[in-house]
Image (cartoon, rainbow, N blue to C red; front, side, top):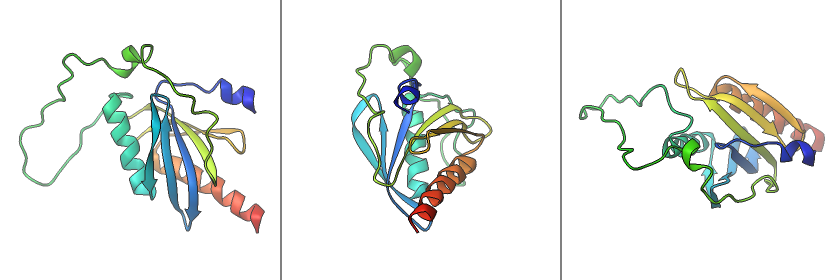
Length: 158
């Protein structure tokens, strides 16, 4: 297993450490290799929002759509990236922290989002406990995979 984990690498790799799972709701932490501190999340919606915020902060993978709102607002202006590098350009110079060894109390997933197209995400999700990798073509599918995998563990405990 460790050999397979050691080969797991992506510049936008996020670790989802699940510490509590009950009735389809998750609680835990989000980790990535560019920051030593973790980001706590409380529920599925909070997890998605914080992951999306991280991708937006990195500007990677780039989004193909922008947020919509029913409130009147000023004309959309693209973020000022003047003087800032995109994550692929900057990744080689950033300090990296080991995240592969960290584990959640209930489960651990590593998510590599390759694209953010069609208003959703596409990529791969790696389940550490099962040593299994699953492709997903939407956020909903990613969440279904996580839920299915954690329900398997609950069935084993019963």
